[in-house]
Image 1 (cartoon, rainbow over the protein chains, first blue to last red):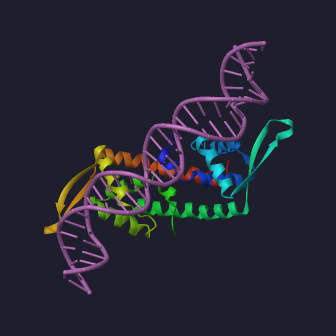
Image 2 (cartoon, chains in turn orange, yellow, purple, cyan):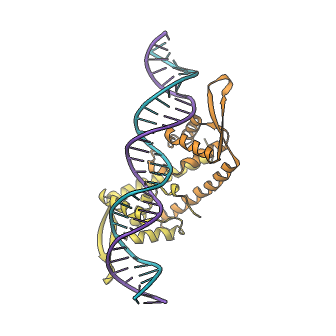
Image 3 (cartoon, rainbow over the protein chains, first blue to last red):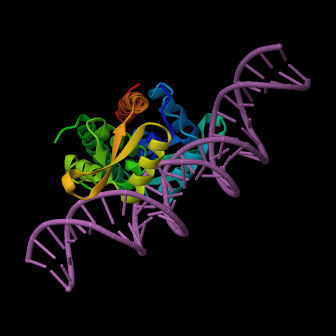
Length: 110
Length: 110
DNA sequence: TAATAATGCATAGATAATCGAGGCATCGAA
DNA sequence: TTCGATGCCTCGATTATCTATGCATTATTA
């Protein structure tokens, strides 16, 4: 199923931080991981992903280091920080609450 | 709980059309209904709501009519059309699919 | 071996949803 | 009579994302 662009807004940072929290990852790897896990429903544009990574690093949620996988080409890995984990935790709860509230409104409940 | 602005993006039109689908409503009533149902977590700014109503009417998802409730002041009521119901149905499914996919990625499942 | 696709990082301008602030009017209550 | 709630609307600013582009390396394949 194709998901409209508007719906994607706001969750990108959450998704990015979440997959990095499971293990250090580099940009391209993040796009592939998200795509695979979502059956290609979620596609991270590079023009969206890289600015997010840079801003997260600037804000102290991520750190980065270069590494060339066994003589392979060099990649830029991102690692989540303690502040990043806290940020992630908070926003996971927010996402959960948000969806429950929207579903409540959509269901017509009071 | 306070919900960040980014998370709100994209669901506003869905929420608006959904509450109108339950019965004709006017703008101010929509904001109050959504606020009440969400325990004040979702607040529709007027600067967001009215342009959405106008664009939905322009696109044929809504029609409007003026009515003054028993001698009271005049209000502008919106009514969902057949096209609007179809649009709503499609986007409800999209919302459901979107949340399930995001949750799948956040859960680290493959 | 030459072309092409995939990998990999990055930026810049355009698009569009939402926000914040304001304008204006009516109505009921203090 | 003043003030808060109701009621509709618009405009400029903000910002997340997109599209397009640039550039380099590696693997495939024709």
